[in-house]
Length: 310
Ligand code: ACO
Image (cartoon, rainbow, N blue to C red; front, side, top):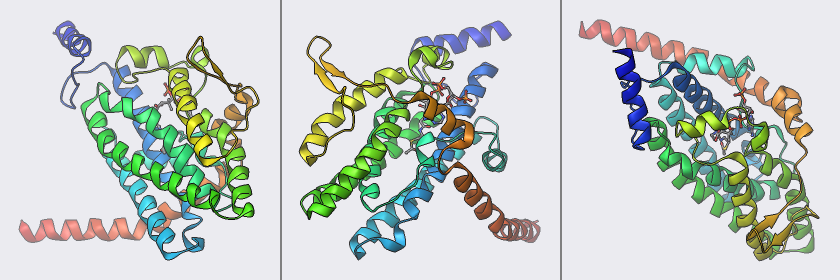
């Protein structure tokens, strides 16, 4: 019977159909999904911090309302993703513990500080742009609950990306100081955005198996290339320079050649020594511990209601 189950799983993957929570799946498939979905959920939750930093300093009521809504969307994305992970038999509480004990990763990008308001625009344009590039193919992920969560998340992400671009358009049409602020921000965020796609393919231990299982649909380098090609005309429209002297159109490949990101920096950031890792995790831990009374009260209320009904 075990062989039948495995053959059934293989047939589903082969036919490009979806695996659902009650279907049999190899333990390694389940573990890989938990790893990726948890990391993705943590990224959404930690990703609220760099932008939350500017809510009280947004330059107008309109910008404040937009930023608040965007940060709230990210909390929502984290919740859908934790719920998707729970269909694989883990508990949200357990995942949160792993995050605040630094036992599970979240995206490297959120370990960089937001130093100016232009960073809010650049995060929308580049960081959310990179996120969309990486996540649209995940709407076709072989695991049903993850794929379905990605559909709504991607719609909201593309709205986020456009608000970032619109913010930057307003700034580049402003004063010289505003234009300089945008360029300075692009200089800081370009390379970390390229690193969001993960290590180069020849140094990506999980890619081959995740592609074979239909968890990932493209390699890290394929998506990075797509992002570079998409960003170049957008940078031109904004009148900003991408800080890569090797960036040039290659007519033979019909794609841009570009420079090598600093992979030592990437490794240091995911190992925990990026500019803001300690601060991000400490903040998340404080928020979790500060919310303990809410969880306890909700639990007590649920128990009381169950008692009333019994
Ligand atoms: N930041 C932190 N860790 C990373 C990053 C990154 N940018 N890229 C790769 N890693 C980690 C991987 O998690 C893996 O570590 P682990 O084995 O300890 O878990 C290791 O580096 C090696 O990388 P890969 O073998 O390439 O790992 P994987 O196949 O999981 O690919 C990728 C990484 C592309 C990020 C994939 O997990 C993915 O597509 N995830 C879903 C999208 C996501 O998480 N986005 C979050 C940021 S976007 C946002 O929230 C706005």
